Length: 325
Image (tube, rainbow, N blue to C red):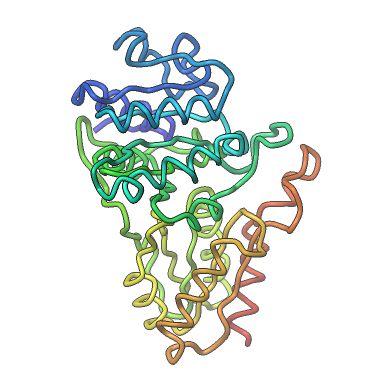
């Protein structure tokens, strides 16, 4: 198997989908000739043609609106939004149309598409380039929301998302696009949507994370080990629907839990996970569930960026708060 980084795995997944399914097409700003702002689609237009990998105007609402028409008429569009912070002009299309086609038509039509959006900070980008808006879309019925943390999962989840009969928001952690490589199978394979992964076994605390925060959480778990705390780390992978069984079984084993995300803490997805644990595993808890998130402020510019997202030390502080309760 080839060793690929996360962005290479996504490119490979798109190539497999375009090759195997004539209904698939990629569209977005600069995805064709330039290969995308992060080069996720590099070489795909030359290989598959400009009618399968389509450069669009700078109009996010138009990109998603066109994708609705394509999806309803039998295609499997993969619209790319250059940064998750650019998704806001398209929210009306996503909430009012993409997520509601199946219900609106009483099942006569569906809207199968995969909306790709790089999210999060860490690359020294300007304003609106580093947002983590996953909670907006987890809150919207009719959408599935996926966020891979590894190259293997990125390709497998992308191909699984393209097999869904309904829309998927696919958040890509751009901070770790090229951070590391791992073996990724050639050809077609899938990673199941809706299934979390226990990436580090532990007995004293369950730490839940996704995307960029997974690797930082694993670093924190190693620091916690030096303090004598055995931390289990769970990669949620799918944010909607959440893998309720894996979350609850982990908490029932460890008795303590912490949720980590880069998005602002207030009303973030961590709050929903805390509620899920309280509803399903309250009697197993030995301490209140903790949260470590971004601050309740817009993603800052360059000089303050490293202070915004949780790092291993902040997560360790959160672990200590739960362990020492």
